[in-house]
Length: 529
Image (cartoon, rainbow, N blue to C red):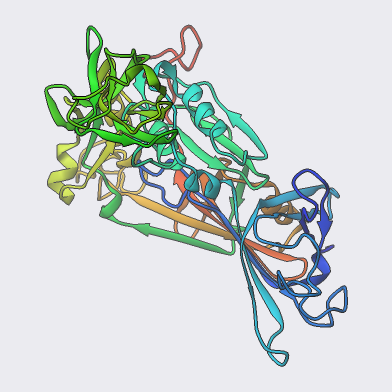
């Protein structure tokens, strides 16, 4: 069996200006970890994925140059620095196909000091999720009547460094108001907002190995076939039977908004502000409830400030002296939760802004509602286990209740027959019944080594969001799962090993109109939401 070929490349000439291979200088092991770290009902957004490896910084590297990978050194490699993009590819010998297993940017370079030391350089790179985590919400208006995918697209497009590609599914929900609770004065990260939208939709957001940012809408993981089956071919399996993941109750928090009927003063300057001669001052004014200035609110349909009505300037801070309103200019931009003012003094004397306000329609997230679904029998038999999801931009109470019911069914055990001695249909122990009637089996991860050509291909082809069947005789596992995260290690050239972290697949059959096998509502199928 031929070995897998590895390739590590960097963009030394800048993005999209060509890849330079540095494989000859890479020291093993090479480690990749990407995806969603968790398999619970609230685990729906990936964290930052990383690549770690070392480079040969001695005279035995490809350039024969000591310090070749030490940025800033006199003989350092041109273009090699923090921020350059890096790509890892692995070639399947059976098909000759190259698979991108990581695409990201170098975040940390740590050369080992000392001419008699290891003369290696430790390198850490991060995938696009790190860009989303570092980028902040700024200047984005409240979104009105937008689907989840439209909001996701807006957020992704506001990250300065874009992902390699996007795959954004059409959302199931349209939100009356979204991004209204973000704050320009204390900005949330784009990643935080991606997570809020994903959980409001009950979708998923992650980056695949090739750098594609993916948004899955609700039920995109329903009724799909398995991409592959591991039938006693895994090298490791993490499986537990525990009550800790057996949910007895699910709560979903939804956020119906209250909206003003007409424009209100959502921000007002509290103290006079000095603007020097020919000077400019930038201010951010957060929107607050006109009846409770301590409470922040969102705003929409904002009104462009009008001189005298919305701002005044005087030569004295107490409002006396000469009226200088005509001598100042106020440029304003509105975000969802704040106004940005750029005030310029064109007068020949110091000006004091004595009045400054922003008017618009207030959007209030004050009356949160909790949807709930409960299985009292599980609570009685095993104790309470409650999961709570904050569906931040979901305003529909009925959707919240349906989501709670759906998650309770997915993350609780199914009924199986209860054994009764001497009762026909209930006494065939091990055939139609079991002694216990509820069990929760959790498969945390599965590991695969390239021991066959088929497994080599699966190690390279499978990615976040793929569905796999796991069959293992000793543990009795025979279920389908989705890959939430992957950890790949190349400990020696040509021998990659992978561990896939898993989340349960929904195998429920949902109702479809006039389709045999799918239209027997309450018998063979159930309603989706």
